[in-house]
Every structure is written in C-alpha cells, then in structure tokens.
Image (cartoon, rainbow, N blue to C red):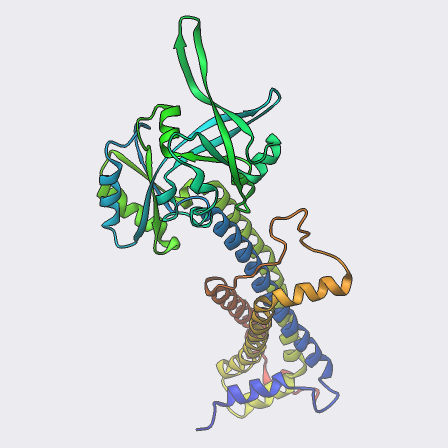
Length: 419
C-alpha cells in the first residue's frame, strides 16, 4: 500500500537540502532542533536516574536499621501481649518477620564532659535478624553479647566517635523521668559496657542510635515489656498499603506506622526536589521543541510556490497543514527517540562513564572523605522515562500547529504571482 501523499511530502521536506544548496540552512536549523530535543530528553533521563539512585541508596541504608512497619500502643505504654500482636500481624501474607522492641530518647554520657542525646532501642537479638539487615549482619558479633542482665550496649560508629569510647569502655545512660526520693527527683542512671559498634552508612542512625537488650531497656525505662513490634514485609514498596490493612486488622488501640511516614520529611523533600528539577529541565526540552516553530516557518516561507502548486493540483488546506505537521512531528519523534536511547545508555553505564571522566580530569566528584556514597548511583525508572518521552512528543506536536496553519492559508495566486 502506498503511503498518503502528506506523509511522503512531509518526509521529503524533513530531508530537504541534503542533496542541494537551496535549503541547506533550513535543514541545518531542523537538525539543531532535533539535537536540542535529544539533549534535553537525555539530560532529564540522566538527572532523574541519578536522583533515583541516590534515593535508593539512602532508602536501603535507612531500611538496614529500621523496620518496614512498626506497631505501637497508642498510649505509649507496653503492649499487653506483643506475641499475640505479632501473630495477628503475621496473618497478613506480606509480613515475613516480626520482633519486639523498646525505644525511647535518652542521654549517653562518658566521663564528665562528653554527653550526647540518642535513641535507645531495646531489642531481642534472636528476633532482630528477622526484621532489619543490621540485625542479620551483627547476629554473631556484637549482638551476641547483648544478654539479659549483662547491661551491655552497641553504639553507632559516629556516636562512639563523638563520645570517644571504644569496646570495653563504660558509658552512663540517663533515663527520662527520674525517680522520686526524699531529697527530691533525681535522674535514673545506669552504667553500660560498650561491646561493639555498627555502621549503617546513614549519619542519622550512626550518630544517634544505641542498641541494648530488650529486658535491660524495659527495666531501665520501666516499661514492663516491649512497647512495640517491628515488622518486615515481602515488598518494601507496599509498606503504605500493608500498613493500612494492618491498621484495620489491629483495631483502634494499635498505632501502625510504616517507614515512609516515619521519614516523611526526608521523602517529601526528595520528591519536591525531583519535581522542581523535572520542571527546570523540561524547559530545556520546551525551548528545543519550539525551535521547530522557526524551522517550520522558514520552511513554509521557502516552500510557498510548492504549496501553491499542490493547491492548484487539488490539495486541500487540511492536506497542506498535514504535510508540515508531519515534518515537525518526525523531527520531534527522531529527537525524542535519540534522547531516550542516549539517556538510557548513559544512565545504565554511569558507573563506568563517571570514573572515566574522573580519571581523565583527575578529580573526584564524590570523595569518600566527604560523602557516604562514593560512587555515582543510577536507577532509571519507566515511571520517569515514559512521561519524559510523552511530554517531549506533545511539545513537538504543539510546535507544529501554528506554522502548519499558516501553510494552509497560503493563496496560490499570491504565491505564484512573481514566479
């Protein structure tokens, strides 16, 4: 089957000027527009892929320390029966692990001058490996020394550095609330022995988290048992949906909090940053796409006699408009596809490209002494790439409307008067 003549003529105009000199400048401008679209689309894909990679790295390091979902008593007191709560939660097919915990803020002191605030988390070493990656890593190391009644503690590496303590040193925990004595309210103090440190790769937890045995924490903070249950899910991305299901299952007395809500501020900031970056880079694509307007206007001006001849041969204004819409749309499609392919090529090989550039320029974009992540991460996602391609195509299509309409308004007699 032969193609409609609008497609054939439009495609011929896209290639105009390659065989002669007359329209070479117009062809050059058209090529620049396609390159601009391709570079804009490529930049969008690469930047969003790198941002997704950083988000994934931070998320994975965060979830190496915290559970996917936490079940807490609304009153803030100990759960009446944490095992029954955990068993009820396990009935959900997405839940693959459960462990009790006690968590509260406290002060950790070493000597007379070094004192830091931290979250003290009481854990069951045997169960912790079911819900956090950190528990699995330290199961046979420092966690094995967290025995009930031993009053041992495991500190985040940065917290230990700030307190200037190492394995075997003593630290003092100052529990909130204090105790009433004839002399007044005095703070409750307890000496702990540092038996190890952990490094999660996330500064917030490395500098502000300490782990003790569940029984020791319950005694120190007088909770009379676990204050919550940590859950691990089969799919971390389903945490919000599963949390909603568990909230309905558990009833009104249990607070269900998933990891996205526990760290809502950070994730909201990342999403806003991605959104603003997308808007800024989309403007680059828009500028390149609307360069097609000038290209098509120049083409229409140059092809006035061709348009007039087509009209005298019976072509309708709609057909003439279709010819120039095809020309602009083809340029937009070629530029978009080239940008998507080039962007994906860079995004999937950024772990090779960035080190090569660093070696060539003798620089380090992410020095390990400053940044926790020393390699440029990348995570291309179809949820970003497909909208980028669609927006680029829509902008290119919109750019063709006015020049095509102008072409359809050309009057044959006026165009051929001086030919």
